[in-house]
Length: 91
Length: 365
Image 1 (cartoon, rainbow over the protein chains, first blue to last red):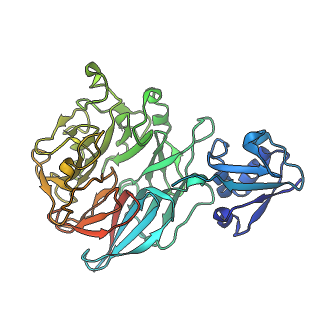
Image 2 (cartoon, rainbow over the protein chains, first blue to last red):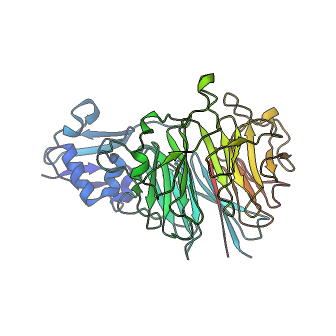
Image 3 (tube, each protein chain N blue to C red):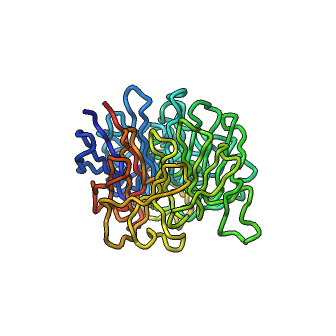
């Protein structure tokens, strides 16, 4: 199963300047674990070394925030879009 | 004439100032890592090609430890994230507070102090780091408290001739020392007060908020400490400490910098108190001792005369290797001052920056 991880501009340099990368795995956690094997730089920007989503990173699987749902257990069906958004924060 | 590169880490980027005329004039138009905090920066001059390392907080995307082998013109980020806690520790690096190249004896060893309180060691020049497990397993660790800035290991001081002897300083845990290459660590805080504790507990074995420790490489057993209330000297590499505050307008502050060639000369930027983190009497002044802390004198020629309310943080003052020495400091007002005559007089070399978090200098032929 493959899905698409849609990247904001700040992360595209970790993906060969592409706006998206393919990911695969039945759940978000599995997909990011697999991404960590291929592209550890990019995966570490989304999760810390414990595998926890960074506090100011929002991920949406087909439009639904994983923070309000099943987090890393969120199903990522074939063809899904996983949208990466930096939460609005800072000063 | 050589090149002097001043690395100025700020809350929102790294300014690289360069001088090619013996530090008389500076170019200050190279600002990098836009909108990212640069809490730590280091110049590793032991290598054939000097290496600059930077601990960058990328905001949403976590901490980054990166390096440059062309004096900051370009940066490399290892394919594998260079620093992180190993599985099973249930910890994550929140910030890289200190990057410290070790001594000439071990030219590929670089240390990194991080938040939460931990020490990492690289044996490949800073491309990859491993947790120093001996300190992480220390039985005191569960009692170490965070300082105001966080639970940081902010200072690493390798002994200049004995690679097994390393000091670290943590807020608020104090000074710890290993003599066996990091396997075991002992607190080294005897005589340093913890003014924030109840009166009958103010000299604990550990738990002090020591802000900075410095020593001269020609005299590694003589240490100087700027504490959270207290300036101290140790003549036995931390076994005991005595106050050296006579002549200082206050005993609070963060920065403490050694002169490069005179082991009894050092510099401080005192602040009034923890609750008033401003220069005493709102006067922007560096203080210098030339007798190992027996007495101190204010230095203000060329510094602002108006009331001044900005602090200098623990890594925002540095000395270069020249004689007379260049002394540099950056403030939380985003100003950087430089002296090229041991601190006797000062010139502003940058202003209107984000608040300055770290300053280091590299002089190359």
